[in-house]
Length: 315
Image (cartoon, rainbow, N blue to C red; front, side, top):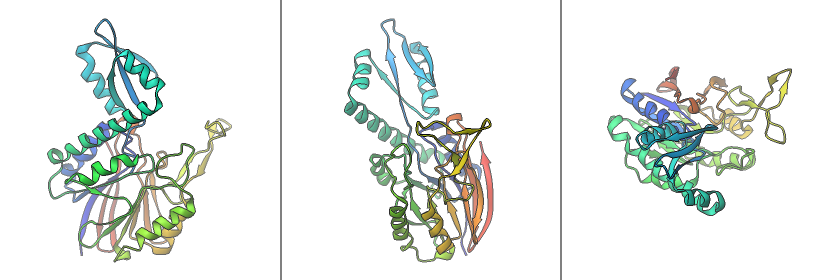
């Protein structure tokens, strides 16, 4: 029987600080693998505008910043650690980004790819060679990053594939979710998601020792509870308390109930960290606090047909 110890995290959303912490865990915990389930890319460009007085102006988290040339690199690091993409521009370029959507989209995609390649370049110095690094895009991740991951020799790309973890445990991967209010790149109807999941699961040879790495959590399990939004995408409150509702996938739950893998790995819903069981299958969602620079993860140890350890990690 194969005994494997890995760290599972999700929803980094561009936070370089969380990514670095994640990689550092390989040596700290003496791991066999690192696994990410989706949403690695950031959400915003932060223009840093060159001013006539040799200073720079930028707005970060709603706060206007005036930065000297000597402070510039430290400020850019702060932006990256917050999950955003810093971009030095002059006033003309800033106005072009505001006025030309195509140019903004192309710039955003370029920064995503450049940042992804930089993140991957950190792996050799931080992760021992024997540790497998499995990266699975999520619904928020543009398809444009896929090639960068596929071409990197230090990682294993997971999307619609079944990956060998240790010779005994296989990992079935899917980053797709059910529809969201934000029309993200990898979302589809629950019926279409069921087809995608059945297709990838059909490639598994040993279901009893398999792991499903599906970004979308199973419906009605407590690890899929999110704040209910009204038609204006504002939180719904009752007596001052936000209303929580299940937003996971019924198809994901159906596939877990049907096949009963050893373990399932999920993300997507940042506020619903935890674990539970569907039948004999353990299901986990570490949640996410990427905007605070906090790594939330699960340390997992599996041995043959048994889950030996599920330990929450926060750093």
